[in-house]
Amino acid sequence: MALQTCQPGESLGFPLALGQKLSDPWSNIDPQVAQKRLRDLTVTPDFSISWGPPSQSSKISASVTKEAVQIRGIDTVSDSSTMIFGNATYKCSSVISILKNQHTLLTSTKASDYEVIMAFQIKNKQENPSSPDIILMCRPLVFSDFNTSPFWASVNAAILQEKPQATVVDLSKMFSYDSSTFMPMISYYLCSNVKLLNYKNSVSQLGSLKIRVNVVLSPIYVVADTNGLGKCNNVNKYTLITEPRRPVDIFEGVSANTVLQFKNGLGNDQFPVVTSENLVLQPSSNRLSDFDTLTNRIMIMVPEAFLGKSLADILKAKNPVEGFRGGVESFTVEGFTGDTKKALKCYRIDPEKDIVDGQIMVDPTTGEPLQSVLDQEKKDSLGGDLLALTNSSGVMPGDVQHITFVFLTTLLSVGLFGYLVYISNMIISRQQYAYINLGIFGILLASLMTTGFLFSKK
Image (cartoon, rainbow, N blue to C red; front, side):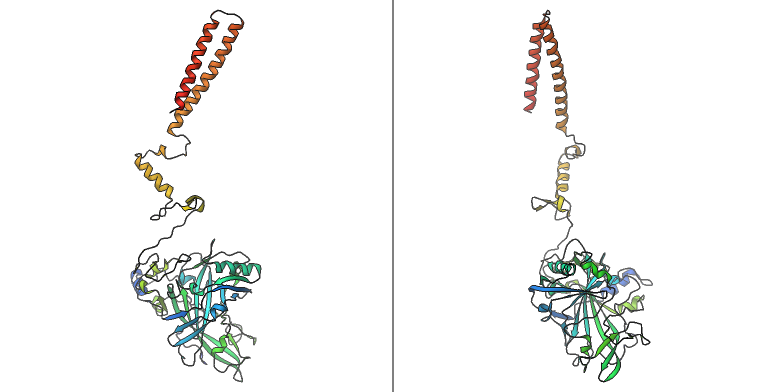
């Protein structure tokens, strides 16, 4: 907070605008040099958050407009959540905002078209005038066929059904592996000019807000109905909400009638022509296309075990499995090495093929279906005899004998039946040798039955 406008050289507007993806090669700099420069930017987080105890039954509600999708009802947890940055203390907002992803060029996460944002507002600005006024915590959302946590199913239902939903609220998992270990994130600062109306008996006065933005790289996976979470597809810009306080409360001496406005480009001074509040942050009009300038604007904050890792490795970090707990000593993330006991790998399975009688039939070392592994081993033991393994033709080695037997038996049976009819006619007409042929028929019939009995025993 300052009663002066943003200074030359400061990043203006939210979000930080890039000319390309951070992970893509940059012009005029060798990719290996660029990666080293980015590795040198990795630091451990310089702030901490003391999250309020999880609430087992909070009633969350959703507010949906063209400008914002906001989730309320988390105050039982947010009210007791505090961020510490240096000597500054920050109050957690009781509102979660959901909108289109503002940081697609930073995170490079596939299909993460949306984003969740929580705001923290400084409480002791007078004692810490150089500290940011607002700190935003951001994380990508990926619309998927499963939810990272039950909380998001309740959020979707609250929007879809337009009524409050009871759910567990645990904010410690929103941006962290656990209550003390943040996920890898990219951090940057920006400045936003503001206009104060009805401030200290003046019609209007210009000032600025200093904002720090922390963007977690790994996404949250959520199920989103079109008329549920899918409605955030219409929200293109972020509205700064810091309930139960107001953003304007950062300024000393404000009254209940003081109004804060961000620029919207409509008035002669680029501020709104109306006198109502405008908390929609505008994007920067200048995109950063110079690598040197960019590296002076960002930090890459990671757990200690990940220090010095390349950006490519950091971007491979997977969302932890739901319910998995522990510090950096007890888990690892794909692409990293560190002081770990066991490396975990994740494989996608097909529930219809890979789960048999409640057991997952997947090789844990390769992720291949276990049946394929067993078939290969059996094939090797048979010297590569694929005929013993495949059922694609429908004919097995024993099937040939069986089919031959059935065919010959049928043929002989038809022949014997015809022979029996012939003998019957001989007897009726009292022809010579009729009874001799009848004896021969009996011998043939007995032979056929004996052969069938012996074959069935094999």
